[in-house]
Length: 472
Image (cartoon, rainbow, N blue to C red):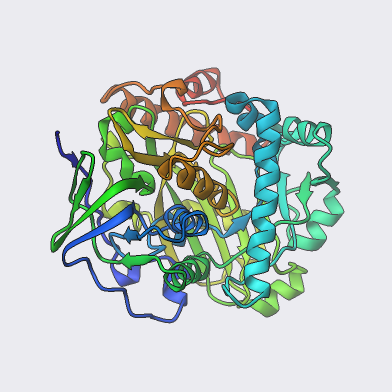
C-alpha cells in the first residue's frame, strides 16, 4: 500500500514559543522513539486530543499498550499556544446541531459541561495543576454590527433547558473587565481560563502515570498502512494494529483530509506583569473575554497579572503547508497590539514581552470531524477544532477511543463521525487566492464595523467566499 507521508513541523525556537510554554518550568522530554517497538494503539500527536484519547483508551481497555508519538514536546502545537479560554459547546449549539441534529447537539454540549467539571476535579485533587479559574466566559459586542451575535445559540440553549448563559449589562462588563470597549453580551458563569501549557504538561504526566508510553521529539515521517500499521520516525519504527491521527493542522499533509481542511493562524501577545494597574481598572481575575468580530478578539488576565490578547489573523497556508511564520509572525502581533490599545487605552505603555502565532485546523462547518481513512479502517483521525478545544477535546478523546477500539456506542455512532458528509473546499490555487481576498475583506469589514460604519458592498460580497461564512 502507498505510504502516507506526514509534514514535518518547523519546531519553534525557544524565543518563539508561546508565553505559556516559556512560563512553565523546564522538564526533561521523554526519550525519542528508537529501534522497533509494538503497540496495540499508536497515537500521532501529543496535544490535548492525543493525550485525552490515550487516557480514554486506558480507561476502557487498560490491557492495551498505547504509545504516543509527539513531533516536539507535548503541548507544543495548538494546545500550548492558545488563549486559554474554557467554555462549553453551547456557544456553538447552532453549528453543532446543523451537523449532528438537535438532540445529539444538545447532548454534546452537555458533555462539554461534564468535561469542564472533569478539569475542575483534576485540579481540585491536585492531579493536574492547570491554573483553572471558573470566573466566567464573556461573549460580547463592541460595535452595533456585533450586537446579538450570540442570540441564536443562547435561544437554542434555553430551549434545551440548559441554564448556561445570562445577559450582561454594559455596567457589569465594564466593572469586571476594566474596559468599556464591549457594552453588550452574555456570560457563561461556569467557564473561564486555564494555563494551556500547564494543562498539556499535566495531561502528559497523567497519561504516563496511567501506563501510556510517550515518545517526544519523534516526528512521524511516514505511515505504511496494512493490517499492522508501521509508523516510521528518524530513529525508529512503531508497529500497531490501530492508529489515531491527532496531529491538528499537520493533518493537512494528507490529500484526503486536505480537501476538507484549511489552516489559518492566530496571533497572540502577552504584556509584562502589570497586576496593580489591572486592579485599578477593576479587571477581575479568571474571566475570559471574546468579542464578535470575524477575526475574533480573545483575552484574559493571567495569575501573574499579564494580559494575554489573541486575534485570528486570517493568514492561510497554501496547500496547508506552513512554516516558521506560523510560530511567530514577522508582524510580531502588530494588529493585536493596536486592538489591545483600543480595548485598554490605559495600557498603551505596558510593555509587550511575548508574541507568538499558531496554526488552527479549520473545517467549513466549524465543528470537528472524525472518521477512518478511506481504505484504512484501522487508521482513525480527528480534526477541525477551529480554535475551540479545551472543553471539547475530552469529548473528542471519547469518540476517537471508541473508533480505535471498534466499540459500538454513542461515541463511535456520533454524527460528528463521517468525513463524506462534510463540505469539500476548492482546489489550489483557487482556495489560496480566495482566502487572500477574504482576509483583506474581513479586515476592512472589521475596521469599518468597529467605527460603526458599513463595509462596502464589494467587501461583503468577497466574504461570501469564506467557508461556512455568515455575516454578523
